[in-house]
Length: 404
Image (cartoon, rainbow, N blue to C red; front, side):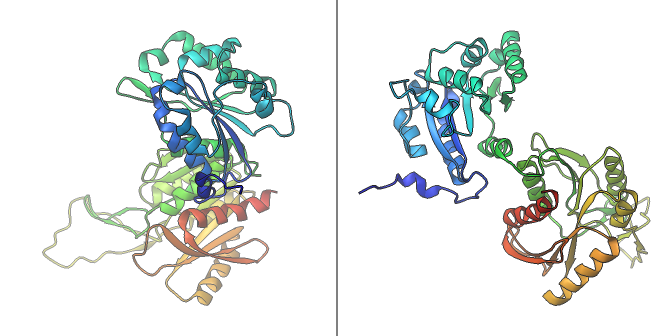
């Protein structure tokens, strides 16, 4: 009886972003190799097929059985008569999609840069370079080694050959391997064939804070979670992403631009658009009203009357000034579904946006989930009720259709 490895039960349990993608996962003799079991499994959870390759030094850190357990496939620990490096990385239609070396030592970086093949990992790398196969390298070593001028030079040399580096985090005097979610995100981006690749995407996210006095503010219940997920999804698909918000996403490769109140967000958005964007996603709960703030804290000993002034509609300004930008608007209401859709369609027509995401707000809900109606340029409406990451993926799907 042919029984699959139990690890493969994890395949695509988180997403299908790497479905059909095959990755050669090479490990060298850094202590960071202890993280590779979890990394291999994360790649599988997103749909990848993973084949492990280990140098002899890596086998002194973790046992090949650990990598076999992690991937569901026997680890390659030597080059045999099966010519494994050619089978997986040669110029063959059966070749894999990506060679990932994580962690990669200074020694291995130097060998690859010099064309030295004396371990399974370096032999795989040389073959992949000759085949023009995509390669990603994640260095991990002591900080002083990472700062060595020749290590830096070797990295630049390999980058000049088209190899992508996911740079380490410098902590406690060490160049540490980045978190697994960052590596997976970069792998997803590298293997994406989305029409959004290379498109400039501007996203507003989270609430605005309108000052009432130096201490108090007017705001909304927006958490910014949907904006974060949209930014990650657009980046995952190859977009050049900038997020305007009052927090920080802290994802290398995604630009954060700070904006607190409506005025800040308006100025930031219009300034960014001057540099040329393809897509503007207005996911922020942009203030509908502003207020003239008091210069000192208002006393709570007596009633206070605030005069709310309607804010300019930023979407209208963006559409007027940048008619060629693809605009995604969000419409949040507390009405029933039919009325929600009707209001969203009217807002779509009024502001001449390309796509509207309508969601019904019912107070504090599970922060992980959202229910939305995606109203597309052709008039079709897609109903999605799922995790915010899934809703974001569906929204980016709808945007991508326009650029196909």
